[in-house]
Length: 536
Image (cartoon, rainbow, N blue to C red):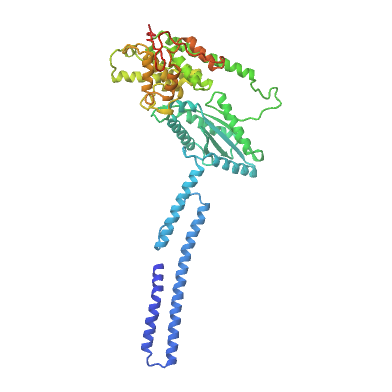
């Protein structure tokens, strides 16, 4: 219709000219006064036609623009996206396309600003904004409100053992699972790390506990698939806090739910805990642990860890080195490197335990494969390649040794990503595993095996340097070769415990390793010595 009105507007001057010409021809016999009246009538008629055309066009455009304006205004209040139908003249279609594109871009921007990119649920800022609004609403109408904090149990070992891709997969699946099992009125989001928040409007803490228990049960019973294709079972701990009306405060709710969540974890994980105010009238309103008790507990825990490690080492002691027997030399080398890197004492202790038990999984590998002097078949290589995973499964049953799992699992990874079991590379490999890999390789090279002769100390150092950057971490190799350039590293449990005591602060300094007897060499002044077979 607008095209027709526009065409009439363009044709109006031509129509006026034609009408005037016709009238002049027909009125050739009319006097001058009559022709003047006729021309005036034609002019007025043409003006009326053009005015009518302009009015029609203006009305139509006003109607169309008002429709667009109402649509734009609706986008402010409507939750669902609105799309304008592309119709009308080219300018209208172009305007509709521009609006639809702008609306889509705005929705994407809003989603990025209000949702967690990894899991797709609400982010922390959105959660706190909604919680503030819900607290105000509950206070205004004297309604109940509850908040739940949800934490994934033992999430760090998942990242350490299987990699961050697997950790991300666990976060996404748990978020999706919880979203599928909450009420439409509830808001669920990621608060940070492996912690999530669930806001339950118009729900008393008891009702929230029922919802939380349902979520805990669903998660515990549903295996999750990680990046490697394996299925793992995950549990969650949930803390709940809530109240009614004017007693609600945002900061208090968050702090109380967080404290309740940590209480759930402290009580053994895989459970819910409902926050309760302390009874100040009770005989013992609080029971904080004293510094003396904390130190005693740490000492007992360390003793338990050492005892468990020694018990496992005693199981391995009768085996030859190539079947997993703990090597005092590997332990002393790895602990020495960790000390040189100035790692925290807890990390040094982890390296020490892992270096003693790194081949624990070989207990489950048939002896005929480990002792075979000829080339291994593909199936036999596969059996050898499983020993880090077997070691992981063994240590998972010993809670005091779980910190050693990442080192045991990944000590056969290669710096260039061609190792096993997960093909990690570079800094993806735990530092402890990179340290044990160098110490283990040196030990293997200077001891005779069924399939090869032993190398000298100098030859072993050259081999480590030749494979730095491919098989080994070049920084660890450089430290190793610098520390032990002048002689064979000291062996024996005495050296291991000496280094361990130094890591704990019991020794002020370490004496340099004693060089073996023999004539000095030129160049780097290294001394070489043929290392005897440790299994003999």
